[in-house]
Amino acid sequence: MECEFPTVNANKEEIQEIFDSVKSIAVLGLSPDATKDSHRVAKYLQEHGYKIIPVYPKEDKILGEKVYRSLAEIPFSVDMVDIFRKPEALNAIADACIARGDVKVFWAQKGIVNNEAAAKAEAAGMKVVQNHCSMVEHRNL
Image 1 (cartoon, helix red, strand yellow):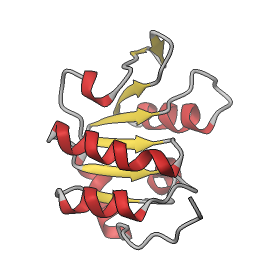
Image 2 (cartoon, rainbow, N blue to C red):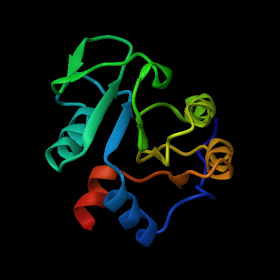
Image 3 (cartoon, rainbow, N blue to C red):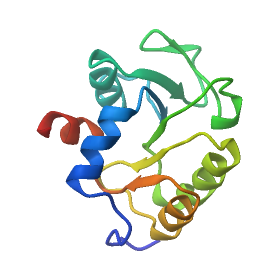
C-alpha cells in the first residue's frame, strides 16, 4: 500500500474530547519491549489514568495488564483502540471494532493511514484519528 494522506481525521477539539471521555484503551500491537514506541505510549497513557488493554500475539502480561490475542477476546467495554499495526491491517481492525459495537475511537498511530478503514469506522459512528501519536497529542493538551 502506498503512503496515504489522511482524508478522515479528528481535529484538535475532537482530540481533546476523546481524551476527556475515554477510560479504556485497547493497544493493538503493544510490545513487551520497553524500547518500542507502543510500550512507551501505553505506559504514558497508563500513568495518566487510562485503563490499558494489551492486544498482542504473545505474553501473558504487559505493563501489569492481562494480554488478549484479539479485540474479540476482551470481555469488557473498550472505549478506544490505539493501533500500532501496518496500514493494511486496519480494514480488519475496523471490522473488529464494528463487530464489538462498543468502540468509540479508532486511533491509528503516527505514520499509519488507511482512509478506507477510517471511513468505515467513521460511518459506524467512531471518532477517527490517523497519523497522530496519542502520547504526543495528550501531552500537547
